[in-house]
Length: 582
Ligand SMILES: O=C([O-])CC(=O)C(=O)O
Ligand SMILES: [Mg+2]
Image 1: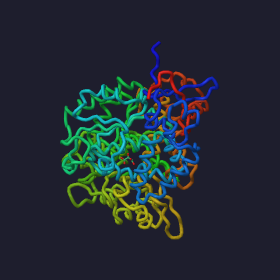
Image 2: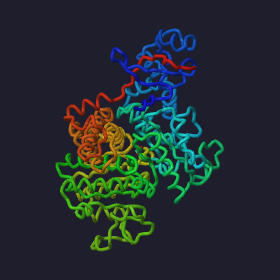
Image 3: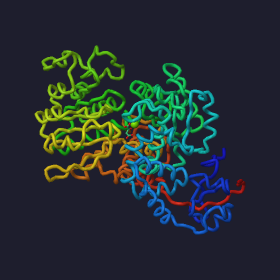
């Protein structure tokens, strides 16, 4: 039997005779203090200080984790801007990872908007200017030919979850070049904080294929390669090399494709989803999140999903992903493909997606309409506008994934009140600055009738003496559980059925929160656990589960199994390995 490699080049997780886990470390002294998953800063015990050669290098008093959290949180509160708070937390993550996740667990609702959407958008934009410590894996056009060597430099030996972006369409803010690394880091923090994947099983990746942003290329401080993006077969080869490298170094890893531009996103997903277990967060994660939201909103209306008529605005990865997920959801609710399609109208920059439109792409075709589909519509120009679609199609649900701020106008939203007593309006674009409408306006324009959810966090709306919760329809309710479920089951493939199951779980779990279309963010860890359990079950049912130990478990046993595998932020004792070096 081959000896299984240590979890990290620097340590392994072992169990002592007493049954408790400890870290067997083979690095000591000053070096050890610079490895974020080993560094306890002021919390090393006397025995550890002595055994690991760090006496004199750390302060005399041994702090508890509680004291460390107090000290660190007070400094956090003294930061004056959201970006400052983000940088502070990121620096903590790169210094002492257990403490970082322990604080995050205590203040999850407060800190998620700082570490993740919307502030991560700002961190992406200025990434090259605020860069401090190495985290994650970056491979560029200059070294893709040696990707396996480079992956060999990553100290982690058992990576299970990768988030990789080419930064071509970050959130709703477009091409961000090398800065996209910040989104991969942010997403993986949620995999740990919300999903329970151990931080040493995660790897953020930036695929630096260049940037088409001349201002970045011209910026001497820009940290990516200074040339235009690869395209065509060169681009495909770059990704092929990356996927091969991952499959060789980390054969058990799952890849989450993140923030790829329209067109590329679908191509990359289809090209690799059967080669390595992988999914696209913006297509499938956002799709599942939106489907869950419209199922919950239909329930709040006292109607069925199949009673709704959907207008999805934006035909990129997010918009098409949402349209496809709703189509699958309608089919699971009993409609034929044709009937499901007939209830979904996709609008893009020219208006309603129609055959013969300039720039129509292959992945959009199944949603394109023919002239006979809109015969009898009252339309002024060549293609029906968003407003005309809402009126003529009698839309009851309007979902925005355009990145265009303020796109949903008052007359269009008011027009929905003719079609339904309670319009479902989800301006889902991120970050906050790119939202299609302010939730407060949507509530006001509809006199409180609209059921509203947004992609980025918004405060509840007060209107006419009442409080209207604004659900956060963000794929963060899906991907940590979907990915963790796939990791637990060692899924050979991430099937559409698993993604649908994630959506259904989110909708089912939301029911316990009353008048809400999404749960409160404070519930994200419990929701992710339920998603992970049901995704793993679905993997078993579909025969893609490679983890033998879970195949015959009952539901309760499976849940207990998943719970046991959730990583929790607490210090493990460090012991010096026999072959330790400084
Ligand atoms: O990151 C987020 O907040 C959600 C997402 O995937 C996107 O907007 O691209
Ligand atoms: Mg995204």
